[in-house]
Structures are given as C-alpha cells and as structure tokens.
Amino acid sequence: MFVLRGTVVTMRPDGQVLPGGAVYVGDDGLIAAVTPIDAVPAGFENAVQLAAGGLIFPGLIDLHNHLMYNSLPLWTEPARKKPWTSHNQWGGAPTYSAQISQPARLLGAAAGRALLRYVETRAIIGGTTSIQGNPRGAVPPDNDLIRNIDSEKLGTHDDFIRVSTLVADSKEALAPYATAVAAGRGFIAHSAEGTDPKLRSEFQLLEAVDVVKPQLVAIHGAALNADDFAVMHAGNSTLVWSPFSNLWLYGATADVRAAHAAGVRLCLGSDWGPSGTRNVLWELKVADLWNKTQSVFTDEELVRMLTSNPGDALSGVWPRPLGRLERGALADLIVVRRTDPDFYRSLIVAREADIRLVVVGGRARYGVPSLMNRLAPAATRIRTGKLSRFIDYGDSSVTFATVLADLEKVCQDPAGAAARAATTFAALAADAPDAFSPNASTSLPADTFVLLPDMPAPELEDQFRRRGPAGATPEAVVVPPPEPLVTGAAWFDAVDANPFHQGLLSGLRAYA
Image 1 (spheres, rainbow, N blue to C red):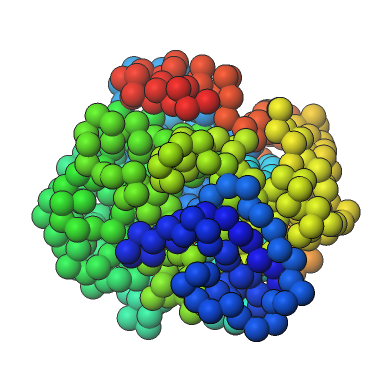
Image 2 (cartoon, one colour):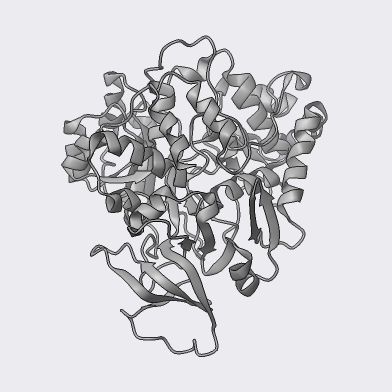
C-alpha cells in the first residue's frame, strides 16, 4: 500500500479536481480513499508516502487495438491513389500480406511472449493501463504489465467480454454474441468502418439481433448517421472513435459531431501500428487536432474519452469501477507532468516524456526513478531514445533489452524462426486442431505462448497449420525491426507522405 500526494484530477461526473489531494492505494489493488473527500482509511499509518510531482489522473483506457501488429510501421499501398471506402478492400491489397499479415504471424508464432511484452510496453509509456485487442491464442495472465480488456478476469473465473473483429454478416453468425449480451456479457464489435453508406447495414444487423444495449461497444462507426446514433443512444451503447486510422485509410472519420449531439458515449482507440498512433495518448492529440477545426468538445470531454467514458462502458460488465479516482475503484492511475495551467490541456499535450508514473492494480509498473525506486525496487531500467525510465514486467529475468533481443532474432533470421515455429505448430495442430480457426473453442496448451492473428485470412489457415506461421515460403517473409516506442521524426515523416488525410494529421508534429 502507498499514498500518492498531488493534484488529483478525479474524472468524477462533477469534474472534481483536488489541488492538495491524496490517493490511498491498498494492497488489494483498489483505491482505499481519495482525500480530502474521504476519511483517511485505517492501516495506512506506515504506508509509503510519495509526492507525485505532477497531476494524478486515472489510467488511460484504449478501447480499440490489435496488439499483434504493433511492432510494424505505418503502411500504405503504393498503387493506391485514392482513399479506400470500406474495410473490406485494403486486406486484399497487393502488399498487405507481405508487409502486415506474414511478419505479424511469424512474430506471434516464434516470439509471442516477447511480442506481447513489447506492444504492452509501447502502450504503457503513453500512460495506458487497460487495452482492448488481444491476439488469439495464448491468453496473457492477469497482473501482467497492463490489463487486457478482452481476457481480464479481475481475480475471478468469469469471462466478461466477447469480441468480434471480423464483421458478422448474418443473424446466425451473431447469435452467440446475442446470447452473451442477454446474459450480461460485454460485446465489442467492429461496425461500419469506412465511408460507404452501405456499411450502415452492419450496425443495423446489430440492432436486428437486439445487442444495441449498454454492453455494446461499437468500434469505428464511420459510416453511421444521426439516425444510427439515436438508436445507439437509446440503447446506452458506446462508440469508439479511432480518427487517425480512419483518416489514414479512408480520408474521413466518424461523424462524432452527430454522435455527440445525440448523446452517445464516445471513447478513443489507437487501432494498430499499420494505420494508427503509437498509443492512445497520441490518439488524444488526433482528436484534439480534429476538434480545433470543428469546436465540438471541451478539453475535459476529450480527456473523458480515454478515462471515465470507457470506464462507464465497462462498468456494467466488470465487477469493479475504473476510469475515475474514487474509493473502491481499480487502482489504475498515472502521474503526468503539469505543462499547462489547465489540468486537461496538460494531458492532451503530454508526450511520453511527461508520463512520470503508471500504476496498474495498485502496482507501480512504469515510471521515473524517484518514484519507482520507492514503489518497485525490482524494476529494471528502460531506455528508448532520450527517455530513461524503470519498468516492472513482474519477472526479474525480463528486461526491455531481452524483449527486443527475442524479437530481433526473428527479424534477423525469419527462415529459421519459421522452421522452429512450424515444429510447434505441427504439434499444436495434432493436440488442438480447431485452435487455429477464427472462432476457436479449444485453448492452446498453457505452456505454449503462441499468438494468432485476430484478423485471419481463412484461405491461409490450412497453410498456417501445415507450413508454419509464414503462410508462404519462409525465406520470402521479411520482418521489419520493431518500431521505436516513442513517437518521433521518422514517424511524422511517414505521416506527411500519405495524402489521404489532406494534411490534417501532419499537425501532430506540433505536439512533439
């Protein structure tokens, strides 16, 4: 247990900010009190007392991601001269398999544990404490680096969330999800991604099977209109906005002005490496850029999109609240250096270097030495660019250097990695033959940490089983080195080179 003192930005409904506040974090991973609102709880007389040295916010929640692909660089199809109009198009682009599917499959099969640790590290240095978008295959344990929303058990044996990455195209395909929603489970579904108005039928199908309820978290919704948002608001459902990815692929994004006017709960998601931001802290900046041209949201409303709003979206599904600093909530919090007189603006403009501490479930996982040395003495140093911090992977033998080394082995010798992984896959195919299908019901063995794509190409599944994870001749797979963790000049240059966003995303460079 420990006490963190500083300016507490609670993100409660009343917007309460406590300039001289303190957050009491218990050994049970929950917030025991936030003073001066609550009475000082018993048992903290000898607890570690720390000055935060910045603003204390709830941890950031990324409600849309595809973690398996987050070591990869931004992707564009060279032959494509105009934006796509539907999510059904770009997966068939000539370079998609070689630059996205094949390297991701190989990394997930040959270095799955390291890959997951790398992408979670990429998220946590931006203040993320919970993230959606687990790969299929091995399930990361609770109490790993950050919370994995799809599989988090919160100390129970319950399965709280259902996820549909591939859009279901019939009532029959949606039937299992409808049953789960009726039983109170959460349902996270990609829907209407693109600008083609025909994509509205994907959301209308969700409405037809009666899942537009508080448990529904709809991702993208770029083709939806005011009528759809009225339905979503009536069902108290949630829309996840991923503006960078939408602008990168389609040159347009969801009509969040109409969604906001309809009263729809809005959240943010950073999507994935090939068409997304480094972490949800940067997705917040994309939302801010968009908002500067539209004047729809206050700064507080933008910050709520990755704190209290996703917390509310999960509150009816998870047994503990999150996204706010209040007694009884999950002790997921961050400390951000104050760089602006306005509390919310400080978070909006914050860079990775401004994140001083990240706590997940009451455990300090990442932060500056002065705080981590007191809270997590077993943590190891992580250096990336000019950034130097400490990180706690929960295993003293794991450092960021060992994580990178495991990934680089695959990059340097993809043919050898594919051959080794093929042996593993042959054994898995014999022991759990349906574990490779998109709707697998068979779990992988507990001692095998293999990650499988959450966006598989069905025609490659047989090759995947028989010939290993490359889905092609192993020598043909080129695996790029992992992208830098910190958003920098090379990434901004790649952003500038894509004309689909008409220069809007180039404004991100001003936040660096």
